[in-house]
Image 1 (cartoon, rainbow, N blue to C red):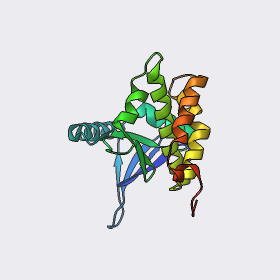
Image 2: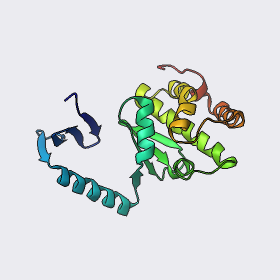
Image 3: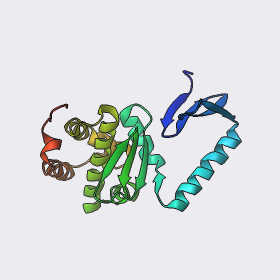
Length: 187
């Protein structure tokens, strides 16, 4: 399957090759595999999108997922959801961003304070991508974020951050709790 890709998604594994699409559902029971044609796959994706949209629980963001995947060098799904008290969270390779973190990344402004918020949100997304790659250590994920947020900012189409924007992101970084700034046991 070197010509296709596969991705683990909470309830199963998606596998695509140029000739076929497989959806393998894996749980406590024996593995069940379905072969879907392209039109059936499109119908499945649309149905899942409408169900997720109707529930209001979350929405997968293609542009954010593509940028996060490019940064990570592996597939990363980014979804926006209401996460009271959190900016972002990572779970099983999927990144969840709070709606307030997603908004500046999805609704681009021409400049001003909104670009500061987009840069801060890009650093949050980079931090969560750091968790995908480096797992639970906050310090290592934050180091990853501070090293890569500018690249992610560019991947998202915001261009190169100016020095004032970079200073803002650094100030936000320096105001984080100690667990983000200093290695803890197990990091």
